[in-house]
Structures are given as structure tokens and as C-alpha cells.
Image (cartoon, rainbow, N blue to C red; front, side):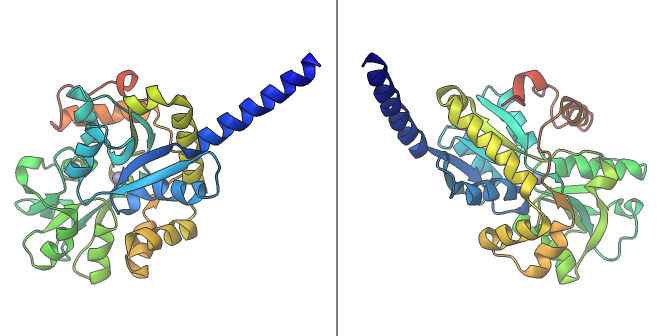
Length: 301
Ligand code: ZN
């Protein structure tokens, strides 16, 4: 009799906890770029999952997105890792738990520029000083024996870069995709170098969670990160394109060009790759005191 009662109580508890787990929403911020497709595919797959309920929060710029992340208005975000590192350095409680993507960046130049050496004296746009795009620009200049002092660097909104290049206001740019692919598609620019050429195992975007979310809801954080990495591994070119078409409103041609340059498999942040980033962040003057792997990265969900 006692045994029977035990089974009834256990079943009731399982039923109750099972129901409550399903409903808690995880708010994730993103920008409509191909670099965020792992998050978007996680949401697509979670629609069928009883354990995950993700609410996407779309932003139009990195500063707006970062503001929401830093003030706990969202539980996490797909964000430029250098911007998140800067916030961490300033005392914000956030943790990087996965990469956003692998490779996926190009240096775009006007059609007249033939090599990196031709960039001397030219105007080049990046989205933000705290970005892998800034690092990649430094790398291509270094490959030609130049430095950042040899070019005019300007910060522009990503959406403005293709038209600024077409209008000859700038001579090149490096930014999150698909804005590089747009210049190629329009015929106003070409790929001068890719992130693969300039920086092996480059980092760019990361999936960053608030420490509040990780501490308050560890089970949800683990379920989400596990689902996120699985979604990244499942993103073939065809699947990436169908998700991108649903969320990004870009032409087939722009997406076909852009998705050649990026992949989403194996999104762990390794200590080696992160330490390599730290070295570049210091060398190119993005920060003197970036957070260490141990302080900022959690790779053991
Ligand atoms: Zn990125």
C-alpha cells in the first residue's frame, strides 16, 4: 500500500515539474544577419520541443542590443564577442557560452583596388572599433606591410556600407554578413580577402548569456545551449538558406554568395582560439585588459 502511494506521488511530481519546465520563456536578442542563424535555427527546432520556449527579440544595431543584454532585459544574445568582452571588462555579469558561427567575414573593396597594398591612403569602414572586422582590417594591412595609421578608418552602420561603396564615399569595408555579399551582388565591390585567409579559426560573434539567467535557471541555460550547438551542427547550406529567407528578407543571390563564406558546426569556444583573440585584441589596441578565458567563457554545459 505504501509502495503504491509512493508511485502515485512520484508520478504527480513528475507531471507537475514537467509542465512547469516547458513554459518558462528564454529571451534572446539578435540582429537580422547571417551571423545569427544558429540562434534562429534553434528557435525553429524548439517549436517542436516540449522543453524550450524561446522568445526572439530583434534589434537594429549593436549598441541597442548590447544595452538590452547589459541591463538584463534579455537572457542572452548573439553578439560581436569583442563588444561583450568590453562589457564584461566594465563589470557587467555576462558569459560567453558558444561561438555564433565559424569564418563568415570578408574584406570588400572597390573594383579598382587590386591588392592589400592599394589600401594605403584609402577610406575603409568597419561597424565598430570593438569588432573582429577591425581586427581583420588590421590583419590585411599587416599582410601588406601597412598599419591602421596608413588608412582612414570610419565607423558606419552595416546597412549603409554597400551604398557608401557604390557612391565612392568609402573604398572598402569589413562587416557582418550579408552586407559584404550585397556589394558583390550589386557589382560595386569584390572580395579582397576572407577571414579564412587572414586569421585561422577566427572568432566573431558569440552566444552570450547573462549571469543572472545562468544562475537563476541553470537547467534552462543547459537545455538552451545544448539545443543551440545541435542546431548549429544541423545547419547545412540549404537549411541555412531557408532559415535566412524566413528571417532576413534578402535576395536568393545575396544569400547564395554570403552563405559560401560561413559555417555553423562545432560552436565550442576553445581556450586556444580565445587566447589567440586576446592576443589580437591587445596587439591592435581594442583593449589593454580584456577578460580571460576563465573569467568570461563557460564551455562545460
Ligand atoms: Zn559574426
